[in-house]
Image (tube, rainbow, N blue to C red):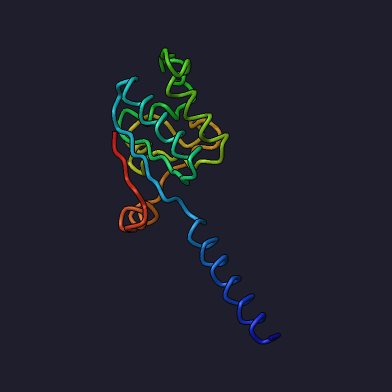
Length: 144
């Protein structure tokens, strides 16, 4: 009987370890490129709701949507009715909730900004890491 319990305990530990490893990275990637406030807000609302429902999201801001992560541009993001927040404020909420938010790797080199201009908690995406997410069939991708 002891051997059975040891085998059962080992099996349970293996299953929980595999689950923990599977949950270590994002299982959802929201890619925002739109410069439209409502599109940005809806994308971020859906990302926040997915996180509340157990998803582990990551956000990638490219093209004009990258401006949401630039400190000097945050005030340009319009507060919308419904979420009663601007898209830039929603980015900050996601960062505060532990979501990895990055601007595209080519965003900063094509603008007058540097990494120091990004709001706290926002990074610069690394193409190999994003490529791995895009190639991973267990990661759901959403583009806005």
